[in-house]
Length: 175
Image (cartoon, rainbow, N blue to C red):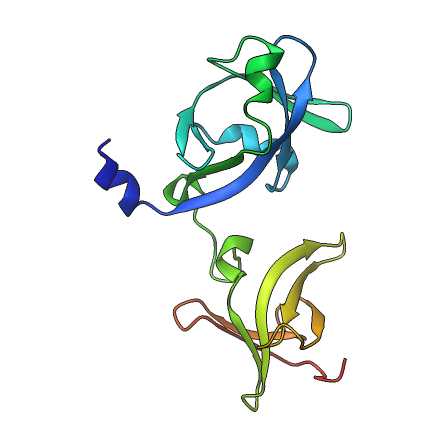
């Protein structure tokens, strides 16, 4: 694939390398996928700022962590050179979603407003709480308050328009 083709494809972060495990080059993986182990279903990974395509020899759950062994990493020193690197994939590697499903990466940065047009700010990031996902919305200026709004279609989230970059919510602006 030529560099021009790489630039044309959307890149989606799915995790990062959070540590090393043992002496044989294993890496601890922090996954943004749900379930966490699904990160191993996507190959190849694009690692670091240079988006180097990396093949995985093996990936597995190990206690509370996920660990992976890359093809070209054979010892702890090589593994340490990968610390804190982002793991991404091409957008077209993700499965298609139904109309009422969204990837978090598509929601971050969208404007959130009330039905009357009152702007509450933009989604800075999303949180998983167990019960439902939550939008962390920060007002227009950095001094404005942060709001935690449940991402629940119907009662709180009235509409999502990815093309317009807009989410309309039913929410008390003072909350």
